[in-house]
Length: 399
Ligand code: NAD
Ligand code: NA
Image (tube, rainbow, N blue to C red):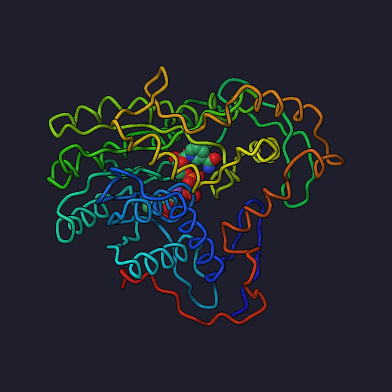
């Protein structure tokens, strides 16, 4: 089959296996170029391990500190002339590279919100690793079937009090327009979004892992959050998704309590805005990201997911003196460069000016688009996208 990008709105329906493999190789090379992460993790469970911050976390642990990794994700292999998902190809490539480097790597494909996948994961840890010393929680999903109630929750991306009007961009065409997003009609939308993206499932994981005795003494766990600029507050941090992030951050004390007799600790890391499958679905945010990229690249401080996660591990979670730098709310901040005053002031000024006509010049919309296609294995040099790719791509550890 010849695999070319096929998009519908902010979704790319196809992914390229060799391109995804190149993407993974590039991330591995970056982590290796930064040298060994001293005192880094050794046995790591990554939940949401196939794309975005999750795969970057897995690569940082494996290739930065030689960690054995188990990755949990929800992806599809190729079937009936349809390519597999990017996360499938990423994971296949990751396992292959890890195994070649002599590193343990196995994966579990299924619904991480379910009790069954938690149990399968625990059984695998018991069988192969005994215990894990780091649990990365990097799920991003539009829905969750609650394992205790059976209720299917769907998250929404909406403001809470009033309609929100601002600029947005169709990153495929570069057309800038005004968009108005209506607020929620009732609190159900908040309840559902919190149920999907809040902290309950993270807590369920840690409870189950602890009860099964598969967390090592001193085990750490980290989950990812976002804050961003005031201009996206109505749709992000003060919107339904922000309530879920408040809930996630608010779960830290409960998880610390679960971990206390193991001398373990839970963190939320606030990460930078980046092009991922999840962030491209949020209105207004892609325009902000394309302006942010322009400013940060000009200042020489741009980072992608792998730079973010390597820095999180090397300079925050695993420091020489064991001290973890936190903000006044107890959070790790690797969005520090994004939130720098000079960066935010320049982005805000560009935001006022941005139009369809000047977008190519004042923003990095080209970089946005390129990174979006990169997520699906497209736009990599040295890959022949007109060639037939008939190879069956398996994730080695998954039958
Ligand atoms: P992503 O869409 O790239 O990754 C989501 C991962 O979750 C994938 O591995 C996917 O397979 C997995 N997943 C989804 N549903 C699942 C299910 N039911 N069972 C098992 N696995 C499932 O997203 P991302 O942008 O890397 O987001 C990860 C976290 O980082 C989220 O909490 C997100 O809010 C946060 N974050 C993202 C940004 C950003 O700009 N992208 C910034 C800061 C924080
Ligand atoms: Na992820």
